Amino acid sequence: MARLVIVSNRVASPKERGAKAGGLAVALREALNKRGGVWFGWSGETQVDPPAEPKIFRSGKVTYALQTLDPEDQRDHYAGYANGTLWPLCHYRLGLLNFRRTEWEGYRRVNATFARALMPLLKPDDIVWVHDYHFIPLASELRALGFEGRIGYFHHIPWPTPEVFLTLPSHAALVRDLSRYDLVGLQTEHDVRALLTYVSSEARGWIAPGGVVGLRDRRFRVATYPIGIDADAFVRDAQAAAGSEDEERLEASLAGRALAVGVDRLDYSKGLPNKFAAFGELLKSHPERRSTVTMMQIAPFSRGEVAEYRALRRELEELAGSINGEYAEFDWVPLRYLNRPFQRATLAAIYRTARLGVVTPLRDGMNLVAKEYVAAQNPEDPGVLVLSRFAGAADELSGSVIVNPYDVEGMADALDTALSMPLDERRDRWRANMDKVARNTIHRWCESFLHDLSGVDDYGADVEPV
Ligand code: GDG
Image 1 (cartoon, rainbow, N blue to C red):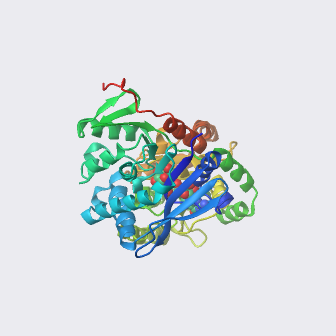
Image 2: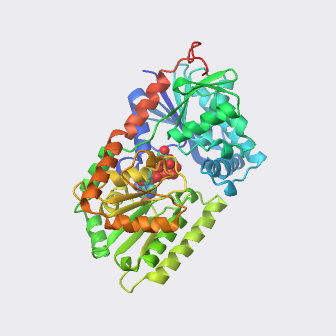
Image 3: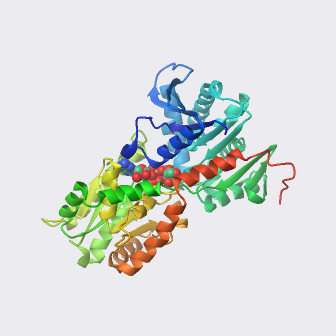
């Protein structure tokens, strides 16, 4: 079996285990341990004139290689082009899109730096799996240095439709970069259609059955790999949470009221202002719900170095304050708004206790919280998932109450409906969702991507355009 090399901006430390590590980190580490290999990424540190070689250490069969970056390069790459340009673009937020040539150049420069640092660690037969929008040009840079082995790319966030993508001044170069991969994985069929439509209508490429794409002298494949969670681990965590101290404390604090829960990084793609507004609207237009339901929003801060995230934080503080100011009783606070992360075991207890999981992003590649909420439910008395149609997860989780997050009043009505849902219907909907969560796990995602990447050839001369 070929050795595996994983590239991602942040590398999960081998010390992060059990409850602390995220599902993705655990799955990637498992794949690395099985095949042996290298996990390469940014060290999290900046330094003027950083060393050209990454810091290297080994743990089990895995070599970790962490590259330090120059501070200006890192800013142009991370806060600049990756999170100030590509993130809003891929989440359809053109009003928030900043494009600066210096950042685009910085983004490319960092990818070239990463490629130069990684190249000496590569063997010709390695399989390289690159993760996410920070690294789209990495394959081009590795090819320029002479690496001819298989390289795959997985895009964790949505791929925008051509009308949106064309607003990016560097769109053509970015797709040329994608074509240097052998396999490009996206979360949903919608994303795949969006990219293929761009290729055929704007880049004058051709598409053959199976998502094989011809672009200039390159052939590569684009396919769907919907990411999942470690469903068994989540079921176990949730079962362990039953009767735990966390659960008891939470139940006691609710005093018999229903709980609606949201867990999202504090990010403008997650639709938090609209979610808060919808909860406020529920309390306004369904006054009988007051004092009967509590919403808890866990929203750890993220990307504070990007101005839009700081503005969002202020907006949410104001909204939460105004909802609580308007509707709170001396013994009930409607909205509990928490800006810090919690242990996975505590999250499991909260998910399991919550009658509603409220996941209403304006756009989301997949959204793993939706799947975690489903996995954590008690099958005898499951809660209801209220889910945005614009989350990738909505393609699979059809047992949810699907909402349009731009329709605040519609969401308020959906929350009301979900709160009244009879047990039989809750069970049926949960079963349908759980079947999907249990089938499309993170392990399956990982294996199927690696299986397809291992199997790629040069997409044979017999592949013809259709
Ligand atoms: C990107 C895409 C795609 C959150 N708060 C806490 C905590 N979390 C964990 C959740 C979940 C993960 O973080 C968040 O994953 P999401 O999928 O919801 O969202 P992004 O971070 O935006 O991820 C997304 C994903 O990549 C994978 O491809 O689904 O669309 O945007 O696992 O549980 N974990 C702990 N404490 C917290 O307070 N322990």
